[in-house]
Image 1 (cartoon, rainbow, N blue to C red):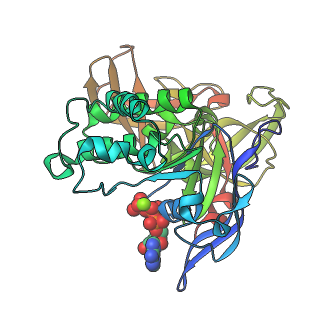
Image 2 (cartoon, protein in one colour):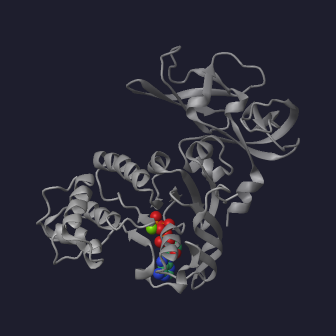
Image 3 (cartoon, helix red, strand yellow):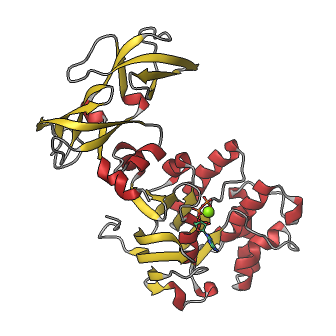
Length: 380
Ligand SMILES: Nc1ncnc2c1ncn2[C@@H]1O[C@H](COP(=O)(O)OP(=O)(O)OP(=O)(O)O)[C@@H](O)[C@H]1O
Ligand SMILES: [Mg+2]
């Protein structure tokens, strides 16, 4: 499941990796292959083991068990300076006594690169991170965001084959952060460097990554392309963590015909009738039987609200709040059993007023059905 395309070779490979700090089990049976040139993001909440995983790939931290290969060699067999891996940390310390220019020029200088080439490369890097004109400043004359940009330039100038980045944009304001996301991604593609990127910001992960590994409690819950993870979350945690979702708990009552509408090549999905605490709904799912406990995940933009029941649905709710946000309207509703439901829409359809009684529905193939066991397995 975590494998890369058979045609592309894995440049970083984790096999059955475990990490314990004392009796704290922080990385659990991790298997991950990262393809050359790939932008892979480790995404997850605080404390889930992202930095620890990155530090093990960098060779700063030993795995308790398992193997980590970078370019086919075990990381522990090489000294950090021998590795084609560079790291940018959130609080990267620049050399304080050196100017911005000398900090960025450091890598190529110790490799005895010709001076003219160094000048050209430093200029290119400082332009890229929008720090031209700051060449003569010392790090303590820079803001946090500026230091971070110099740190990125200092790592990228070495053109490492693998660059590890731990929340590199965390200190930047939103506007600069969005701009840097695009710049970094563009540069990564241009230079063909493999990025292993850590963030807890799901929007950042969605914007930048070729693949995202969603982590929780030291476990990769799901790995895949951003759109795949958004559209087909495999666990309740992933559905909840990536974007906004309405998650209903229920039991499969009826398994209908094949729909072929699940978006998968096999088209083995069936139309399921599902009983919820507050009503009855329909959704497409594969491999379910009557009596199975499930979660039904529906994005706010996939929800429909109507004054009448739709076929296969009987889920009454009442409007509690409407918030107009320019072109988008966000509406909160509540089902009979008290569950809050988020609904968003772009155009103004019928007027939804507070405390109005309505029925909720959706196109069955727009909902994702997740086995409740998947969630039980992940909780500890
Ligand atoms: N050197 C250490 N010694 C003991 N425990 C540690 C050490 N480093 C990390 N941990 C613990 O390991 C767990 C994972 O930490 P890690 O720093 O990898 O999380 P993270 O996903 O990077 O979180 P954040 O988003 O907050 O940076 C945490 O419970 C943390 O307290
Ligand atoms: Mg961290």
